[in-house]
Image 1 (cartoon, rainbow over the protein chains, first blue to last red):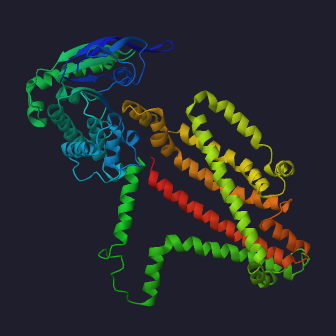
Image 2 (cartoon, helix red, strand yellow):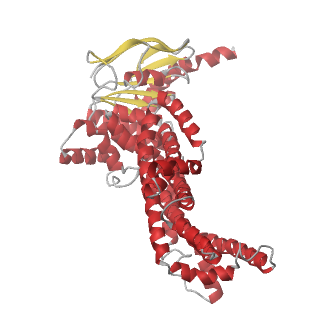
Length: 255
Length: 295
């Protein structure tokens, strides 16, 4: 599923949260959106998800304009603790996500088991989210997004609340799931290494007002690996490029 | 996040009950003193409040006994604790009191159920429609500032002297409590979960049933628990002030028969029943909140 963002802007009264942005994301592409706080990166993602109405412009999925949450798009939210349903088991949390598709029970159950296995949570379905560690809860959140078998996965700082080791695990998990499920992914992050490591393309946003300042193609070899990729001189170059763009306001202040 | 804090506590509780854990049951008990010590250590959390409760009640009874023994208050308005204790079996055996208590409790339960049902439906509605919340709160607070017992004469005119009158006054008294708690509970639904539900394409009724209502449940059950105590007070008050049946009426009859000792025994019985109900509801509240497990 192609995503076309055409002149998308968000305004809160007088305040311009995001200047008009135009992007095209191709089928199966992995795009990361990076920028300092207040650059409107989450705002952009929520408008793509149809959860926030844009002030100007339009989002199209394969030429269909987005007007409310579209079919075939799943969202992984920033905070698993506030987006999962703590009163339901892991399995019920997943089943709820596909309820709109009205699948026959055996199909749904098979799908849930498959997704749980893909995120490394086989056998954890009967537990409640709060009985799992933070990293595992975020895996539940990712699994829930996959149960509906989306063609687009929108992730809003999905690893912000977990420790560094868990974060590396989850990054590799998402890369693997992209290949396994063939989804188009847009992922918002404030972590510069992560934005380069995961992406086919990095979109760099700047704050005050929020705007898109650079669209960088990441020409690193695939499959990516935490050690092999991050050791490459090209990774360091790209990382430095994104770093200087994201940190630019601060650098100007020093001067 | 409390989710992570609660999980280890639960596992620790499980470990404490495990026979292989050194502090647990399997350890050989060396003497009575260590046995008592171990039991105290293990059940301290449950024993301590009971002990403190006994001490508190004992102090009140002792103070009461002193007041009657010194003749500070006349025996005719406050009999001694022993006199009340002696007439307690008499009161407990009175079939009129049994019927009265059953009547009171049925009215109480019916009023609580009706008030809760109405308040929850209204509260979810008001809580989900933002422009309804403010006017509704003003109306509710205005109605609430009229003391419910002041409406008993009016209720007698409307409903007569039967159980409907007591029930109506109790519903009027407690529905706002459940209503306000429901509105707050609904308004407190985590916005990120609402977004999640929207992106999962839940229709409005599913969002209500699967997200808003569970999110509001802890607040609602707390409201019902608080309302239950007030409902009992109001039902008994209505019985005292003109009801034709119920435990309150029996109390009035004892008083009119100049059996003040029996009246006090009757008050004690009503008090114990009220405490038991409150305890049960507190337990149910705690269970529900643990099940919902909101952050």
